[in-house]
Length: 430
Ligand SMILES: O=C(O)C1=C[C@@H](OP(=O)(O)O)[C@@H](O)[C@H](O)C1
Ligand SMILES: C=C(OP(=O)(O)O)C(=O)O
Image 1 (cartoon, helix red, strand yellow):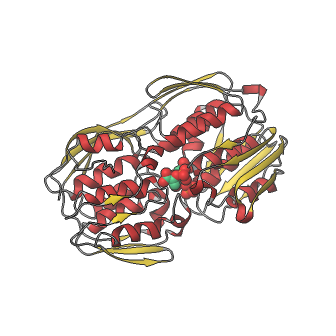
Image 2 (cartoon, protein in one colour):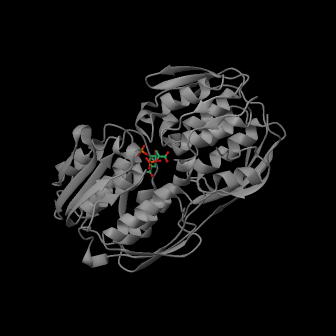
């Protein structure tokens, strides 16, 4: 087992807000400036994509970006296939935004993204009048053709998904009239909040959200807060490695994003939110202090799943270090993320001596000794890679991952940050 984690880091900018900054900035009239942008591969792919649609996007310095949006000119047909890399958020939101204009575009992505379901956005976009041709099962590559005069819809997605909601709201900007999305459970509301910051009125009424098109966006400035999903890795590592005491600065506390922290506190985690404040853009942030704790297993409330949807792999690692059983249910959506995250998490734990039961829509982890010594297959999934490395911090023998390259999609500084805190994570060569 590694020694304690100590010190202070600043987690990268929020991935959801970074995608939206570039996409909304590209649509707006005028120059949008962004500070604290996540410079992960997912976001760089979104920047490239929005350039292909006609926006002028430049990096002025680390995290500082300027986006000259298309405004009344509108998005244009790209000269080539648009490659969104590994990013479900990127491709689904951009498909929505592009549909609001008269254009034709073909989208693709890496092997992981090409295996993910797109019908969840293509079906409602077709209802709005978009012609969409995809591969079998609604997979990428996919070509969209729009005449830019969409029909507004009132739509209830069968699954809770901020990506589907956001796609349709962005398409709705180009549909004359009211486009309403009615959610099953509340999901992250960054698109709504940011559309308002770009001057577009958004009606929010419980679980329904409406935009009225046609709508114009005006450029603004965005301060991207720290990503609670990325901070989770160092926080969990600090909770489970004896003697640890760390601070992660500037983390967004949006309640649609912080359910992992509630769950960890319920497990007995010593987590404190220090220096709470509101940053530009209206998001509340805090510095998160996490100290080594003895954790207990819990039954995680499935009603909160959407508020911690990306955090289950790292929660499962915390559960492996807890006393007793942690039950996670109602998370079937994990099967269609960058990898099948239920199967990948179960495999990563089992390969390292942890007892875990797999179910179609969840898993139960029994805490105890972590032998380690296993090689984890990451399946092009950054969160599986980072979770496995955090598990390694409490394992008797090293945990090895087959591929660390995907970590750069959401957290390029992960290794540096973890090493600066004293975690025994290292690249092996040969
Ligand atoms: O809207 C977003 O920025 C995101 C929504 C979530 O996906 P779903 O909408 O598919 O649940 C989440 O998993 C993803 O990492 C980011
Ligand atoms: C699911 C994720 O992202 P995306 O859907 O954008 O690929 C994630 O970052 O965990």
